[in-house]
Image 1: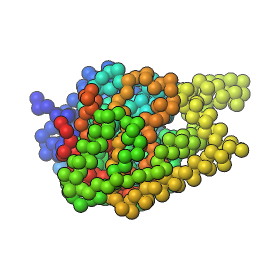
Image 2: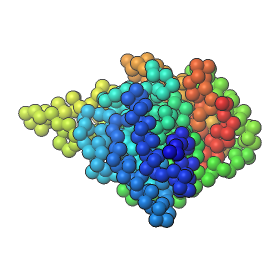
Image 3: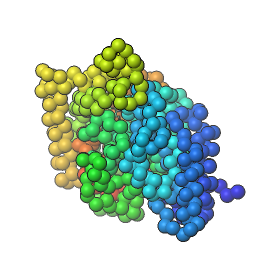
Image 4: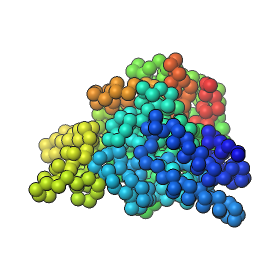
Length: 479
Ligand code: GLN
């Protein structure tokens, strides 16, 4: 029997299928076996769809046998974060309030994956409604770091990160509102792209903070992530904020040299970072110089306000978005005397503590008398952050900085201290507030052997520039 080589990146696996070196069914079986063997211990998946996976793989093999053209992800096993609708499968957002709810339709990104020949194997764990940075806030299970079971894989897309990092699938989708694909990618040593706001349709992504949410690919290498973006990016009329700009070729950009690009290096906030993270940034800066990139020190004076601004805007939007979970339309229903009491009982039982905290905070900042003092002020500071980036991008093609101030922290370490959890996203929140594309690129390990890396941030819709730089870094990363 030939081995399906599941450890290979998505693009190479697809090429093998296209050349007939291994069948899509063979690969799907290997992925399912690996999940069965590794996941009881790691907890990356909430739901599996073995039957569906084997059926779509068989369809790819039939298409190949009859000489039909194959899609760019033909036969590639993909895992989907459980806040994205996959028709006919449970979609719970890792919340008790949606337990038992089965999505009646596919998210736009899932339609795109299917059309590209991808084989969807299951739904991955997350912090409830994507609110968190450790995947410990799931109502169903904790996800563990593949290199150290006592550590967190980050979050909220921790399940997708572990599915990729532990070699169960080469590609997964996550969602990123303030860092949720980048920070878990940093913790687990994989690549993730948070696209420009509007690059990817949010149709079928359960809304958290609608002015920030984007779906992003998480993959074992730069090309794999870029290929994922090639497949999911582009216009969709069902999301009014989705751009109709033409989609450039992201994977092809990995072959373009980075030479001649100008990169701003932002060292703000480095004093709060672990030494391993600082070292990765210095080494990555040098690696870009070696690749012919010019580097320039830059500052983003308002970025340090990102955490405060984000926790006002994101909670305000969340309090409004989560009002739809009322015990009538979806999932859980705790029957009480009248409609109001039923809704109150359902929400009090169905939402976990972090989600309740955010709803309360968001409702407060939007209430009469506080709206101007908190929400409106946050919206104004958000504009100042956007202007900081505009000033830098007038001189630089991209920005380089840390993704996370620390490598993977221990499970439980931050659970009782929300502020320390929120600070895990200090570097990923500002690009989200500005709607900019941002990417995590692994760059070696720290002294404990935990993955570290860097974040690249680009001008709106200039993901290909990030991919060029990421590819230069990937080929020079310490082994
Ligand atoms: N960790 C941040 C939060 O808790 C960001 C989460 C996300 O990007 N979904 O809100």
